[in-house]
Image (cartoon, rainbow, N blue to C red; front, side, top):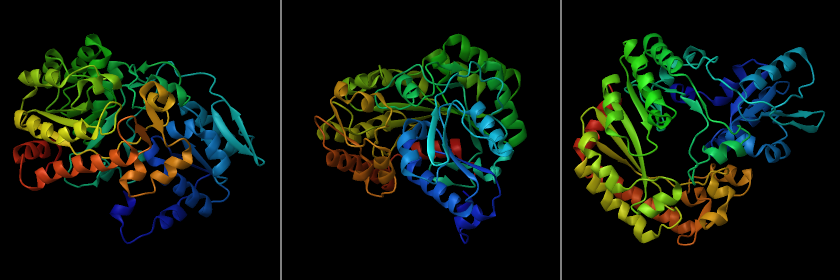
Length: 431
């Protein structure tokens, strides 16, 4: 964001202007691999006496390789590190040895590891709303995966929980992935009241107009989401909401959501035109289930984002290409739906498909952190594909993904589904 706002400047100028004893860098999802490592390298070059520390899923999973390979990294916070990071900072400031549970440190040239000893029982003590602590926070709220746009409505992510109750085959954020990244074995859910307080603060203090939920509120049960939505309404907060649905949302849930929020945007992961492929992944619903839900999902206050993923077990190039026609069919049926053109799927290192490839008939190509580092430094789609299946090679997955992507983009460029695109735009943009 800083570079976008200051195109004439170099990132090295920003790094040089900073003054700190510790620099913490996020290496959470694998997509951060190249950027996080190169940022850490640049920081250490400018601030040799400061500590450079990583944290997140990917750094926790690959901690040993990362510490051995990149000597400029002084430590890795394992798992959920709110408390251990604070304790580490205290030790650095006091000039003490930095060995502590939940941390990997480099002391006198040696790598020392102490595993996570305890896990957080409650998240309600933490404040997730101090947006003003971020540089250029007003512009940050108008960012999205494609960059910064001053016309986007301000939005911010709101955590409902830590962990997940699901174990989807292709996701590193599920039960097994969470455990493999030293995050613990337990799903920790925030109280509905604290979440509502966060939303109130984000809207009233920072002007947030869209809250993005970390989890599907419906997944925690009727009592939870009804309580959450009731607290939000009691506070008179006027915001829209986004979340990725864990299934096909039920009518009663959608009705409650529409009573609570100005608009809602729901992500639906169809992944494949083949129901059996979706079932293998852990998504226990059909395309017909989705179509039947159109009775209450086709509403002008609802936006639906549809996602496909090419290269899942059981998929072939022929069946994957059917995503193109299915996209057109669904957007004709749902004028409030937008099909997201698919990018290459990269297997999460800690996803069940990566942890148990034989169970899913998958051949892993990416096995080390270096593999992910190389992938995320490349602009070639094939370099981002880290697995093969019994029915699709790495090149087939990349080529087919590109065909589906280009076909959907071509529909939009040709002026098709303008009603869908306009509807989606108005939900997220204000100019």
